[in-house]
Amino acid sequence: MAVGAWMSSGTTSAPPTPAPNTGAIALSTTAPPLSTTSRASSAPTTHVSTLLPIPSSGVAPIIPPTGTEVDPRTVAVVDAPAGPPTSAELASPEGAAAAWLARWCPFTWTEQLAVAEARARAAMTANGWGTFDPGGNAAARASWAKTVAAHETGRCSAASAVVNADAPRSATAAVVMVSATRVVTGSDGPPYTEPVTAQRVVLRGADGAWHVDLPSVGG
Image (cartoon, rainbow, N blue to C red):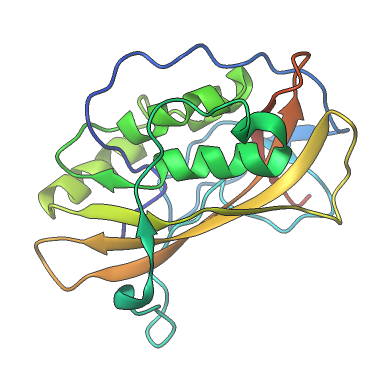
């Protein structure tokens, strides 16, 4: 069973208030079509003309085509970091993006929809969280119901992040590509892997900390 972008796990306390959305690259927003391979939101998506398209959710975890799937036994999975991101994690755009992905990538069917995403909220701007929260997304709820029915759990490799050198950048904004490999186990088949990727604008606030903002796509 495919596991889409909206993966969640567990009951957690209310997450810290996201950092304000400050600073910007010259961007425009539109609402692109939903992806057929992810639990995408219909929220507006940031466009940077030099970037390749990604789903409007900002992430594209899918089951790779037959013959290209990574052997789950070869993936070194890690636990999600405990607690909100540290000041050290938010000291660079790459660190903020990696901290964000590392917190929401793992999931388990025993927990509620949007709990995994909530773990990453403190690494996001208010605008970024507004487009990422799957709680009110009907497609996300339907997809999560399938995950629960299949008793699926996902664990992820360490997140890897790099600033997109071809995208616009300023002292307070950068476009970061971040990825990990997820290993999914369930009750209806053998474990499988899926790539989890995102390309996001990351903004530096007045306090010097970087936070993940809107997804960036080609325009």
